[in-house]
Amino acid sequence: MRFKKLSTTVLFVLIAFLAASAMFDILPYNSVSNAQAEPAEVEQVEPRAAVPTTATLLGNPYLIADIAEVASPATVFLAVEWPAPEAPNRGTMPRYRDPFGFFDFFFDPWYYTEPRQQTSQGTGFFIDESGIILTNQHVVGNKGEGQTITVAVDVPGLKEEYKAEIVGSDATLDLAVLKIIDAEEGTLFPRLELGDSDATRPGEWVIAIGNPYGQAFDHTVTIGVLSAKGRAISVRGSDGRVQQYENLMQTDASINPGNSGGPLLNVEGKVIGINTAVHASAQGIGFAIPINVAKDVLEELIETGGVKHELPPKAWLGIYYREITEDLARQLRLLDTKGVLVLDVISGSPAEAAGLKPWDVIRRIDDRDIFTTADVAEAIAELQPGDEILVTVSRGGVADLFTVTLGDMPAELRTE
Image (cartoon, rainbow, N blue to C red; front, side):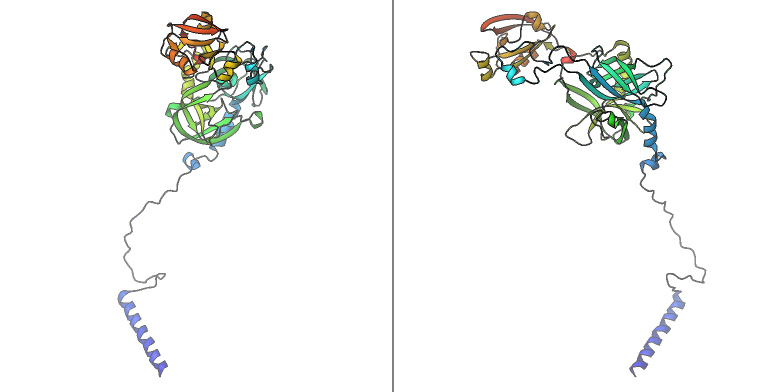
């Protein structure tokens, strides 16, 4: 009886479904109706483009490799040697031995070092087929310093090494121009084309080529982006002086010691910067000199050997000095710590012309008592080149007066 009721129910449901299908033409979603239905109006939607890659944008997945293949032969390894000095390297310290042994004790061994040959290594690149090379001044030094510059070239058909000399250099801009001097007549070197650094934009791809950590890693290629423009940094050189750089390009392309002087290229293979410094305590922060800076002074460097800078006048005395501590006063048998001790007098300076000497103790400048090095700096900063000052000095326990006509501080000694 229960089975008969169930069968009746199922039969009723089946009849109802067939009736509804005939009325509304309902079909399963994967079936096709035999009836001629009107096509549905569908809005045409443009397909979404995939996120473009660098290779898609440029149409060449080997672009970086192609640029490196062309640029690497024009990028060279530079090795520089200076002859050992005849006298111990005393830096900015006195040329005289300390009669009381104070400086011998506190400043050895770096104060009186044995003469030794100085060396430097870095990178450069050809900018002319005749053998003109552009690099950093801090890699090769200045013209006329007696250095020997060896240029390692990796170009089929050319020698592996050449000698070069400095044509012109400028420490303020950190630029130097070299010239191959021992190439056979008619030798042509590969060169790089100089681009337009003013037209660059933060975020664009850049390529660095250089010799990080020496010739063992020569022609290393790294890639990154131009992170920023117009950066200002301060770099302390090997001589202890602080060099100020303005308007540098910042990049995250890997730059290491030895990359200095190498090219920073854009995706057209043109030089847009000269790699010059890296932030030692950071990752991915390197700096390059905009190539337009070099282009603006290139002719002057080649024709005159340097760059003339219009600097504001800055009063200059011409001494190196330090404060007097109680220990130092005892060593020098001074009655008190008043004044500053003259460590060295720069040759040709106003101080030398006036008669100041190392081991003098400056106690007054005009009517101003001197206690610290800041007192001296402030007293001079208030004056102009050509002004006269009266310097009160204690020499060997005897007071003496010197009239000094202040000069204009040389550009190479300025730190700002």
